[in-house]
Image (cartoon, rainbow, N blue to C red; front, top):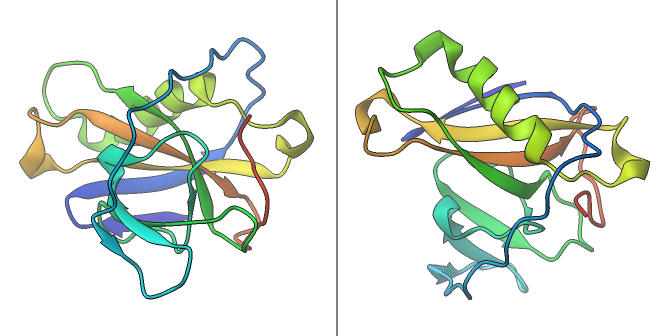
Length: 151
């Protein structure tokens, strides 16, 4: 599945088992950009996501809607990865995102066979100022899920 995002690039791939992944440090408290019209949801920029934030729908820009994980959702934020310095990766972005996200994602063991990744990355016009890739856990069947996907 590929998604084109304004100011970001995105795609998804299957998740490989990553027994050695390290937990992410707790992020600072976040303040919602705006309340969503759906009760219990808030909109944030991807830069404010914390591991375990559930997202619905899959983002079309760097502005995402965070929902309670008990309601059906399309993705769960897992981690970030900073791309190495150098020229814009272009066609290598997918490979770099996979290699950076997969070892860092802590997918629940019971979900590993069902989960792939989607990622939000910097657009050409934002390079090299922004090099962060935002790694999202997504169901490989494209359906929505409930509950947590990430440990």
